[in-house]
Amino acid sequence: MPREYPRKLRVAAELQRAVNELLCTDTNDPRLAGVRVSAVEVSNDLSVARLYFSTLQPDEEVEPVERALAKAGGYLRRRLGRELRMRRVPELKFVKDTGPREGLRLSQLIDDANASSSGIADEPDDSTE
Image (cartoon, rainbow, N blue to C red; front, side, top):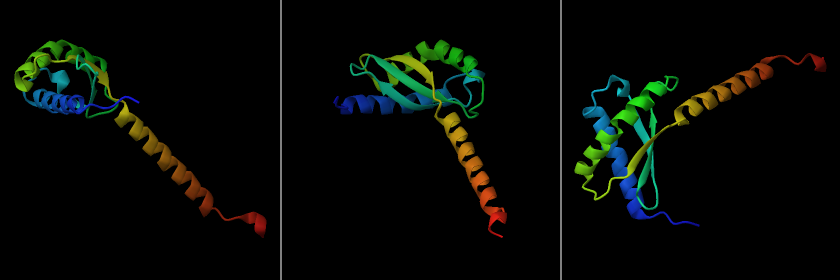
């Protein structure tokens, strides 16, 4: 069982904080408005960071956002190098976070199941009369 190294976790947390701050304050691309990094996974050798991003609207088209993030990746990496003072800043790979959309879907399924079960319980049972 691989062990989670504290440095790896600290780097992931700092990357998430710094990228979210940069997305809020330093990017001028309107396609990145409302984009936030929800999680970061860093490889064991700290060479690659997978950043999971989400938008304010889960049903929003992600292709323009992915292109904007790919275009801004070099700029973000350079700014991270200055801010985090790391010798090597990990390569940034952006991945769409499907958690919010799945959460909405599951919530809707639960609501539908509750509505159908309460509808069955409210109907009078004619077979016992």
